[in-house]
Length: 80
Image 1 (cartoon, one colour):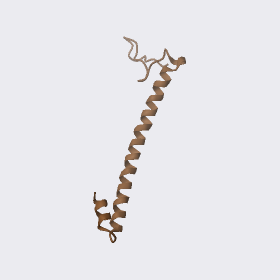
Image 2: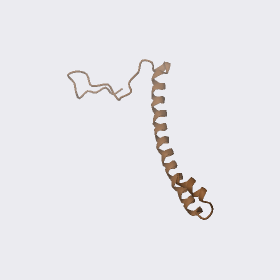
Image 3: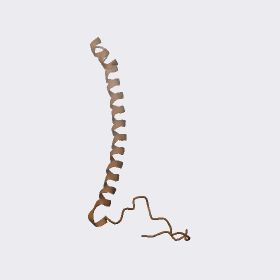
Image 4: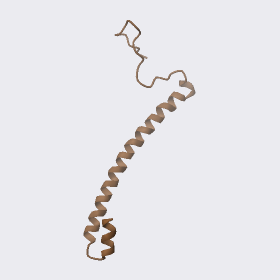
């Protein structure tokens, strides 16, 4: 809104317009960075599920780490 006001005012405020554009550019760049991180995580998670659904992995659906240790043997966690 402020930028549009400055444009309507005409010449003489180009430095302020430039400052607003640079600030906006920085904000958009930050947003893109955050969205890229989100997209990377989504791609990773989708890849995990694609791996689970692959025909050669149909029986192996562990996605949260190793299976718990057998009952009565808390120190013997599965290593596979």
